[in-house]
Image (cartoon, rainbow, N blue to C red; front, side, top):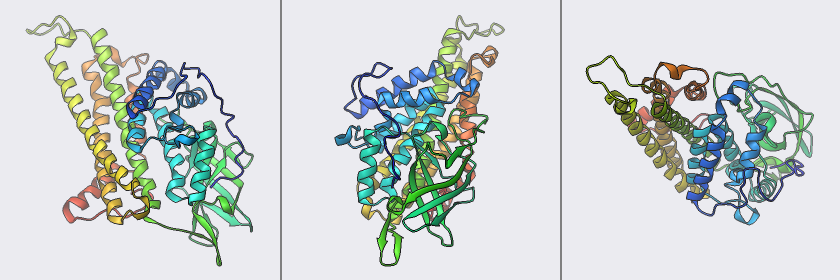
Length: 420
């Protein structure tokens, strides 16, 4: 699935700048490592967001912490963790910086993509090299744009076209491309080195939120890939043909549950940041018969925190439940049925809509319990709402509600599309 990827990262060994010289050995240890990363990121998240800085150092932090190879095979130096742990890690990192949580989430999806569509030989080769060399993945696969056009030049295929979004962009080591073979309806995925003349990033990402995700446009002008690197394609008597299976379609449910965990992580960060501000700076209201000595004694503040925390716990529980269906599918990838896939997709759709609703509410109502002075730009409480608001528009949440509604009312499961 890869095209001449010769050590694109120059990965190093030994002690990391963050002080890590070891790797956790349990799921709990990896989640704790993610929380440590989040603490580092949170320290200057607002300043970096305001500066619209290229997150080169942040990606290096993910590499140094070991989170980049979380799903990598243990025999090649990876953590060998499952998606339940990966999703908890994404959620934890997103609490510190939603942009970097998104970068990590997309990276882990694209790392896994070879398992979804690749041949056994491609899976083994990609996971070994990606893990050993700590590749950081980006992806130029925006279904709302026109497909990249692929021309067949014998032993090679050539990608050309543009995408308006390419998350990971300039900070990635490799980029996942997807296009359609000219004159056919055959879609082709391939992993290619990011740093090459045929890939030009526009550097035009300047959105309301998720500002450090390097998600701007990209021009693909002649990226060459050997047919052997076309994901899931094998040579037959009739030429190169894709070998389809239901597991190929898990890409969208996976990215949708990643989204839900990003939103919940951001909401967690908002609630924690607000709570610190309330404890340290919010003043009690003096113009009331029921005077309090501190803001933390105010009944309406306690009630609001209790309500928001309860809603966030509930949303997390639904998302965790959805993850169990992903794990069940991964346990028998070659025999998964369309019904199993559909049941996972509809529960994930439910989790995503609840995560969005809960996250946006928390991002707004934290001001009710922090006060007018918390609106200062230096406080940065706005970053949480902006991040969820921006990314939650990736695809209309109304359609997710309708998917769940069709299941609840008619017993219909979502059919695989680029967004379900």
